[in-house]
Length: 280
Image (cartoon, rainbow, N blue to C red; front, side, top):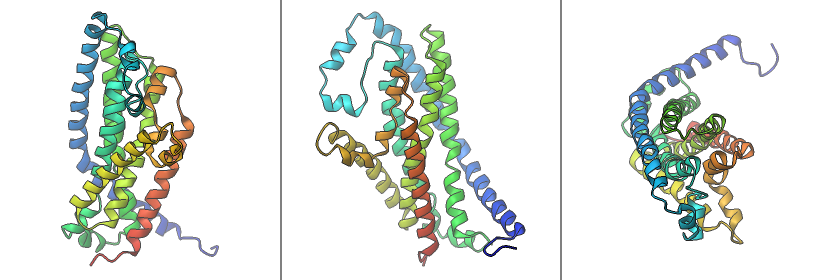
């Protein structure tokens, strides 16, 4: 056996423990994922249902957009409201996906570890032969369940509802908008995870996660088109633009790669920190 090579049995056992943590944590998130998906589906159907009456009103929505402050246009990616793609990009994706879901998943991930530590459940979990690093990674991977479920359900809701009003959205662009949101939401979750392994109280970690994600959103907004625009590179929102995907067909694969890389780094840092910290 080569030096440093782990025995196959130990690798298999470690993998099994990781899967066990993922399955358990994922199972706890199914009900909440479905409830969140239902709420967003209702919101989606409402927006799509309002669109025909808005266009029939004869109001020049694009002229209204141009009258908005540039900072507002930059913050919510306002490009056009005269097409169903532009309308949904602004009303649904820029607000609900980029801001609300980003904050929500950071908030949710902030309790992954801190809640168990605060309520003395972590000692029980670690009393089994499950390494701390496995616990952290397994809990984080369980966040894929709500992220994927919400994206899948709302994708179908948008596709069906826009077809019913005879304003179908391009299938590939819609699929890309949802697929590219996954690295973004994972990055927001990773920020919450880092706070979760750092702080002992879940409520403080959750409030901190909200502040960090929303603060980075504001930072990226206020520094746009200024000499300090480079500071906004710290914000995950810089790398996911649903308006560019739905309206212009620009997929931003580089941004998705950056978000995925940032997620890996944040999870690795959280794992290393939790392995070394004193839970007493």
